[in-house]
Image 1 (cartoon, rainbow, N blue to C red):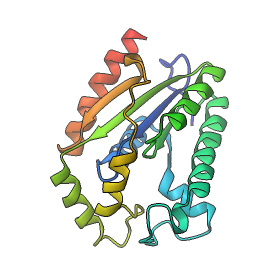
Image 2 (image 1 turned 90 degrees about the horizontal axis):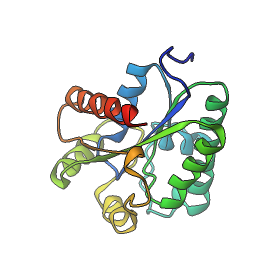
Image 3 (image 1 turned 135 degrees about the horizontal axis):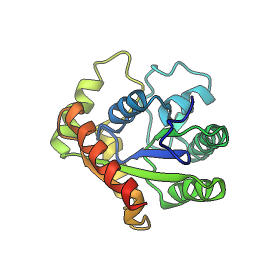
Length: 197
């Protein structure tokens, strides 16, 4: 997709955080608003193993399609696809937990090599709201994510806070609110970040 005239170089918007924080909802809404390609880790993971993206896989956090090896392949594929779009001059949205600093660093190294900009958007909300969203999503046959409460509890232990990210690259969003309010907040914060960069 063509770049807007006011963008000097492609940008990568990384929506990350723990499951059920609304990152996919906001990532997709931002991608639609900005007319950007969005790559979702759940979709890519299921695509790699040849299963329907909306099929449900209630497996252990490191089992089935969620093995460490497949997770590494999934994140490598996200990076590869983002790189392909950036080399064409297009900005891109990435949507995944990015719970490990090493995976976030891979993105930073890619954009550095390509002379692009990156913004990591950390999505956060109250645990009660996360639980409510997981319960609601379990009833949705079109849901792509397999996130469940027990998976969240394990992820919470593993999640590495983004302390390595400079303030110029990090935006924190409270996603307890309606999506349109979160998007408006993101738009304001993005405007401020771009002015500083």
